[in-house]
Amino acid sequence: MQKIKVFIVDDHAILRKGLTSLLNQEDDFEVVGDAPDGQTAVRQVGKTVPDVVITDLSMPGMDGAETARRIRETTPSAKILILTTFGTSDGISRALNMGANGAIMKSADFPDLVNAIRAITRNDRYIAPDIQEILDSDPPLP
Image (tube, rainbow, N blue to C red; front, side):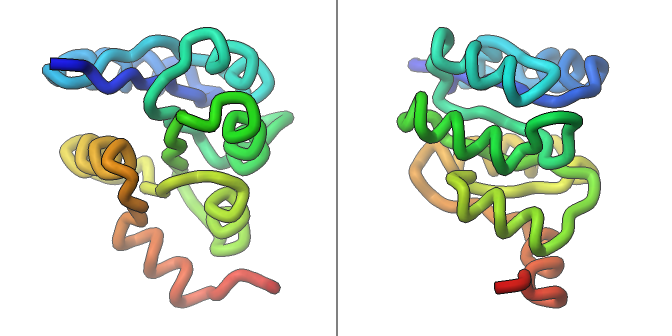
């Protein structure tokens, strides 16, 4: 079985390490790297060529939307999943418009994250229900 290669971008080390540990327990996942910020991620993703990049939306320096855009330019085969604690419709929409394939809240259950990763790997767009509620209740500015 070919594993889905995952790269994690988040400014919180404990989150990166926790996700790495959980995802590596799944038979069909392999975490191939992680980065504490978008700039580091863009450099390392080009070297590791993951199938999926999970990136925080809100990070110091380069945010998740810009990280998605740059990864899409350098490694177009990588699917990008936005992971966020809180989201505004503007921030989430911006990330989706800049190349992200999906979005999910950090408060989601782990099986939901696994399903999101598998969905975007199949070229499906994954918008978690609570993210869709944000987008529906507070439409992004034009």
